[in-house]
Amino acid sequence: MKGKQDIKLNSTLSLFQRNVGRVYTRPPELVTTVMAAVCCLLEEKTDWVTARQVLADQQFLNRLINFDKESVSEKVNVRL
Image (cartoon, rainbow, N blue to C red; front, top):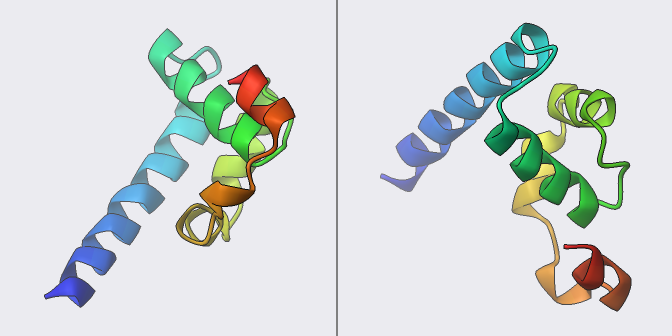
């Protein structure tokens, strides 16, 4: 059962990655807010150009799955 959930999540995220990165030159505020937070956690720039690059990365999902939430620095916590 878990395998089917992983496949569905992966395909949904892939669709999201392709569509958001490609379609939005000026995305909705909520999308930019969420992606700024994701980029901050991944210690990337928080602008939309960088967010699009992060979304386009083939390892994006793996980076999120394997993200060590215990290693978030105080600097990143303050930025969030």
